[in-house]
Length: 353
Ligand code: NAI
Ligand code: MG
Image (cartoon, rainbow, N blue to C red):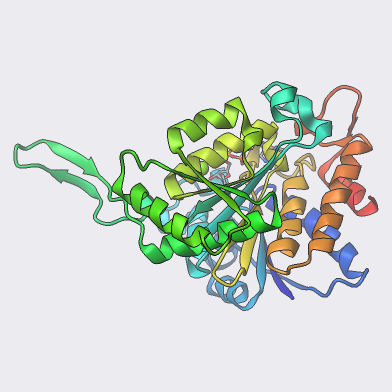
């Protein structure tokens, strides 16, 4: 199993080094992996004048999975758009055909006080949001700003989803639900949007192939409300690109800290890219204080979803739980009475656990 390791910018190299340390520990215990590093984002621009150097895309395409840190930094803010770090990210997602974005929201009991919601609402929370990543109004054509016959200007975008786009992401959703609590809630706006009516029809059809999974439908405005009212009613939420963008950010904050949240983006063969949900945090880069757990947990997702290695995925997740139970905290999740440690020491604590 080959992993392309792309640390990127800011805290990227620090947090990715902790995740590769954990993977190395598993390798010395029999896990068969090979890792190769390459540049992306501002680091790609610095090294090769391109946020996604050809060699990086080639390595990613030849690999089974990509482990990514984050991209972006103040020093690149004035570059022309095609040279900017985030272009590297958009291009690699497209280049790898990553259409299924998985973002779990999981609250560790030790961090219950980090959430802004009441403990009884969020304690034990474990939900998965699956967002379609390559279609919807974000990519629909035509789009732009036009002048109407009466001379008024108008901004417009186009929302559409093809049957194959809905079908393939729905299959991923049901397959994930099979590995979890066997409940899938499809979120749309079928009371208003034709695209959503079609989405609902196709998801309902795909559901027939997964009789063990309980399917429900919910309008997106209600889902936004239910996520803060009673989030534990959900297991897997399946939704389109724009609704998923908003709901996954909302759900991530139920758990309190962005430094804890992994993500996965999968292609049709379950090859994938794994990265923390947060950015490159230039404000704390190079200080050895970033939380590496989101990246370490992304490596666990990689073992589960691309390598089908549930045992080692669980092993990493249990080690993270144990390090937290031992009281180790980086600054972003520190509370009184716990032990504040740095990024590197947190990586060591997880390896030890
Ligand atoms: P950010 O997620 O990098 O940082 C937001 C806040 O959270 C900052 O105060 C930061 O210090 C803190 N934070 C983030 N990750 C942390 C961690 N692991 N441990 C402790 N604290 C952490 O978002 P921001 O500030 O909006 O963007 C900074 C740069 O990152 C920008 O250049 C942006 O374009 C880029 N970015 C990249 C993403 C990616 O590579 N996927 C996603 C989001 C932003
Ligand atoms: Mg977003």
